[in-house]
Length: 188
Image 1 (cartoon, helix red, strand yellow):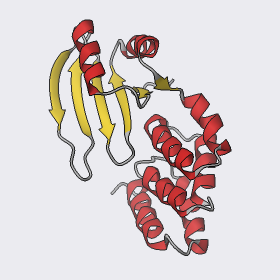
Image 2 (cartoon, helix red, strand yellow):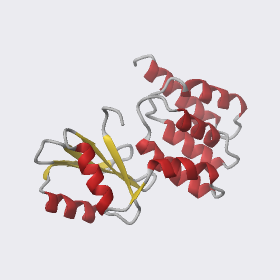
Image 3 (tube, rainbow, N blue to C red):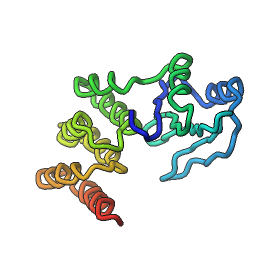
């Protein structure tokens, strides 16, 4: 793991009430929340007694719930959460999503992996997004475009540019993504 935040993507059966119960039992102090908006994820923030920041987020566009932790106890808290709450394992997702035969499994998997996606370049992730951007199903390609936003790797830029050259149905969203990525990597 890098020095960045620790992430846990929660199983679909875990809802907000379960997080509030864990927070209460573990003594986390609520420090704020953000209501969901069109382009804004709903979130709730807590602080553990050791100063670790815990943020519970709900991505309503993909129905993905995950937690992002930063601070001295982040790895220990994630380990404890994994013992208590059902979650999606990153390595299992990376193995299973490319083998999926149903578009819905690709779409859900891409959304879950977008939360886990590392800040540093990752060959397995880039290969997965390459396959998704070239998938035969339009909905999977659309999900790949959506989940590429926020990706910090310059290596994604030529992949998206190459797809623009052959894409017929989703050329406009791909061009918008390419412009976003170019601005992001140009520092603006």
